[in-house]
Structure formats: C-alpha cells, structure tokens
Image (cartoon, rainbow, N blue to C red; front, side, top):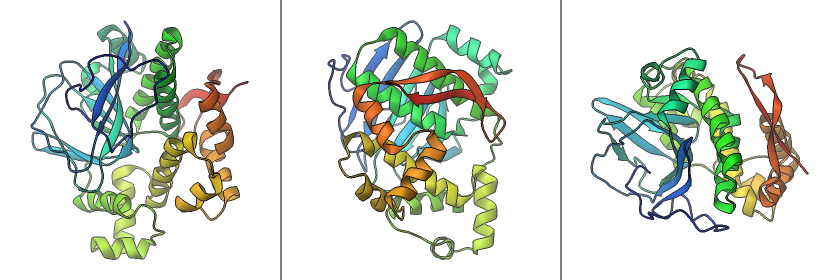
Amino acid sequence: MLDRPIFEEPRAQGANPPAPGVDRYRVSLHKSSVAHVEDGSLPPGWEMPPLYETAHQIILPYQGLFACSVGSRGWVLDANRTLFVSPRQEHAIDHPLRCTGDAALLITPSCEVLDELCHAGGSTIGTAFADPSRPSTMRLRLMTQYLRQSMWKGRDSLRFDEWVIYSLREAFYALHAPSRPAAKLVEKTKQLLHARFGERLSLQQIATEIGVTPAYLTQEFTRSEGTPLYRYQLHLRLGKALLDLPSCDNITGLALDLGFSSHSHFTAVFRKEFGLTPSQYRLSVASQQFALKEDWKADGAGRTGPRLAAVG
C-alpha cells in the first residue's frame, strides 16, 4: 500500500479503478496546492523492504488487512482504522494473512493545510501524528469511497479539494478518541474476522479460537478499539458494502453474503450508519450526484461533522 508509485501519470479520465487488494498499483488521482491524493493497493502476500515517506501522510484503508511497524511499535490495521505517517520514519508493511491484500487512499496534504487543520482542532502536527493508528468513523468511511469513486471518474479540482479538506477534518476528529496499545489477542481477533469474513461467528467461537474467555475478549477488545466487537465486525461488513455496491446488481444477495439476515435488515443498518439507503448510495456513485450538506450535526461521540447526502 505504501510502495513506490507504479503508475507515475494520473489515471485516465473516466477510467475504472483496478481491483483493490488484488492488483498492485499506486495511482495518482488528484494533485493540487491543497493535497496529493493517491489510490494504492498491494496483493496478498506481497513483501517489500522497509520504506519511508518524505511528508506527513494520512492513510485511509478501505480494503483488506495489513500490519505496520515503526521501530518497536506495531499495529494491525483495516478499514476501521486510520494511519498517520510521519516523514522520514522508516516503517515496514506486512500482510499477516497470506490470503488477504490491502488497499487505501493516501492523502499527502500541503504543510499549510495540515498546520491549519491541526491547530483548528486544538493540537499541533507533532501531537496529531504522535499516535500513528487511530479509530476511523463511519462517516469517514463513506467519504473515502465517495472521494475515491469521484476522482477515478472526473476532474473537478475545486470539488475534490473541498472533499479532501472535509475528509482530513473528519480524520482528525478521531484524534480525540481514546487510543490504547492493542493486545496481541486483539490483533489475532482482527485477523480471524478477516480470515473468516463471511461466517457468522459467535462470541464463544471467536474467544475459543483466540484462546481466552468471552468476558476477557469483550473487555480487552473494547478497551483497545473503543467499540464492542460486534460493532467492529458490523463496520467491516458495511465497509465491504461501500466497496461492492457500485458494481452490485443484486443487493439482496450482497446483504446475505455480508451476513445480514435480509435485504430489509441490511437497508435499515446501512441507513442508520450512513444516512442513506444502499440503493441511494449506489445511484449517487453511478451518477456522481452526492454532496456534503452545509449544516453540521453532532454524532454519538459528541463530535460534529458534515452530513452526507445523495442529491438529484
């Protein structure tokens, strides 16, 4: 995902994205005085030497699972986490599951934009990047897919810059969430959820596989991730839905494949998390008719952010 660019030139206008987490690529989608946005992917089992970036970078994973280590510190990340990469720090990327690759949007903001956003949130750049792995929000997950889909299809630079600012602002909101070192059992649990993604695993089954009691697993996972295990798994399923819906012809089939009991169950959960139905999301991506409403509202954690909606 952080490999050197394979395609030096920006993507062709109207091009379809390659297969994330399957193909190997790092494509420039948008570059302006605000930020440089790239779409990157590594296939399962891909190995690379340690690497580093030359500027601060925010990584928004949207597919698969990967491990990142900086010195003696390490994290297992998927679409439920955001990665904050500091410049000139050697880091290594690995895939703990040989059957799973990863894909992410890579945003390199300008120094001026980064400084302004950090100070607006009451922090400094150093403070904001001190903890590289932070929880993502469902709103940011939706914004990531809208950003990715629109940049592959068009060239509206002004619109893209605004979306980048909104996405970065949303990423920095999560800096206020508690962050604690993840226990090995939490990392193993994440790997299990990805390795057996389509299965309806019970808490007892997961705990038995990991080798701990259900009560201890529940306590440690919530302590580490700031959210219960069942919601973490639900968010993984909804993230997969965001990725698959634009090319999906059978929403009921997708819902069942993701572990939902019915089309109506999937629709209700999707609308509760994202504010629109799966059908509305699919149509908005196809028509590029989506927008951020100008009014801001608080979410369940007391933060505020732009409301997302399909338009037209």
